Image (spheres, rainbow, N blue to C red):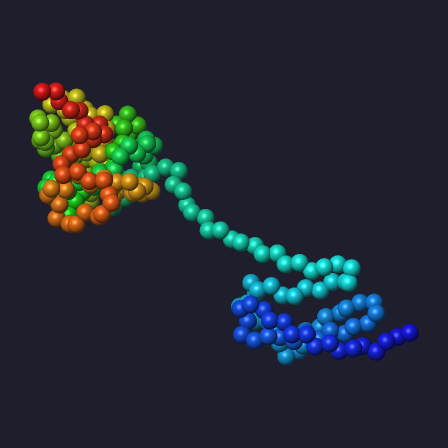
Length: 224
């Protein structure tokens, strides 16, 4: 025997919608066929919301939520690049330490409040042959009879790195690369040194030294 359809008014409230919508359902003995009313249409901008799904009475509806996690770019290698990009090559050695130096020499060298030095092993720091002719060197004396070879780009004058010679002429086992020319440098955990001559406020909670650290990476301590 055929039954006349019965109209059932059901109200759903969906999170994030401005107003509820009405679902009109025709019911008979065998199946349930949902029909949305013609006056309501989900906006395209709400495409991420879940719509009610229908199926036969023998199956149940389910909702799946997909969460998208942002990905972060990880630098496999660091790249040195001067301001005019004439000097450009990768660094393959490990970063040993990172110093923000507030000494007067670094203030002049950087033309700023302080200079940043990223310390790398000299054994793994290699200048490509085609780049060597694009670098110039200026040497200055340092404390305790040392000298410092300062390398910069011939074209734009950007300081690239320093290499210290001990008093006996031996090259130090580390090089000091200027932090601002390193793409992909990890800045966390840096130390502030020579803070006694700082012209800016040192952030709270950082490791700081009024002069050079007693165990500065690569620094040879002369016996007295």
